[in-house]
Length: 502
Image (cartoon, helix red, strand yellow):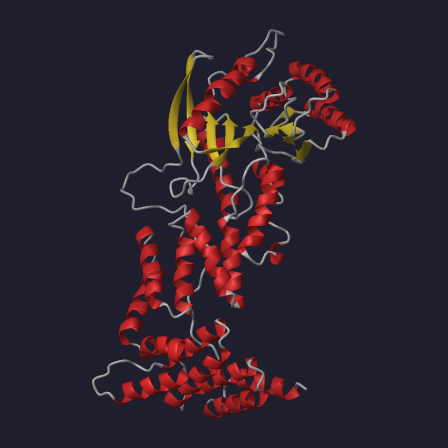
């Protein structure tokens, strides 16, 4: 029975706290100030970069968030949602650019309440001609932008769409018809837009509700339904519209629906045919096809690669595990997930110096007590275990050379190497994981010779014979294990199962 606990690998997140000093601020990003000649004023920006930004040369799509000055509301919410969804492999990481308000009704609305022109035209020029170039020149970005627009920002999102701006490929907004005096303006403009031949590929996700606190939104909902009806008549495959209704809304400031909108847009980002993607090449082809549909290159989520490497390690396809982990480290040389798994892989392969090196690389990035203990155990194993001497001999010269060296070590009074039962058992299981069952049998037999009073070694020998298809020897060794430990329920159960098999 496999009673040794091996390294447990889980997905390691990167958004952890470094060593902090008492009284330090908590930071989610940086403030930047951009002088706008178009608006004739300074505009404050709040910029949050993905965790992967500093550790790679990758570029990222940009989410422009209006009302970005509401730090504890919209900005923190956006950072949290994108961090959670991208960390789970549901969406790609984003650069988040929060645009602080100066005069929201001036900037976001095409019309003022008295019917005079609003400032939306200038604000759109600012975003397209000044802000977007500023972000692209200072950060590594993809040629694809999202817009998240709450409140008056929703009307601006619709305005930018109607102006046929190529600035935003996808928009996630609240109901843009909340202002009564802009409803007919937008509906008339949209009807002309729908009838034209210039509809661009767009994704529009609108969150709406009937009430906002004590305010009645039935008129806004009616206008939204009319708006939606225009699209239903058109049946455009390029323009995708999704309505996200919040029933019985109790919030005075309801959410934008950012999480739902991102999940909808990236609904195929996490492959539904995951089980059919068995190699790195398969995964790369999937995301290449996905990139063509999105219109920008999307990187393979680390979560998907890590999960697949774990699956392949469990099935014994260690060469493909190495390919996947090398790919992750090529993209992100300090990926904790890849470093920890590389250490485990090399330990499985008996390449202990490489395993030690990867543990040390991991611990340079982050001090984790669990992995510090793993490293110390491995260093101790290297210094004290007979397996460390015998394993490379088996790999290069076969079992006879191992038995010869084993006898030499046993007879050497100066030898301080230990013949630990658990370490030999672990060695045998590593060989099984590498699909080297014949070598595994010999190692388990040697362990039984070294520890003839151990029920566990015979249980393991019975298991390896069972996996090799030798039912007779499997039963014999399980019976020996049961003789030494009458309470071995695993042996009892397995013997019964083997005897009932035809």
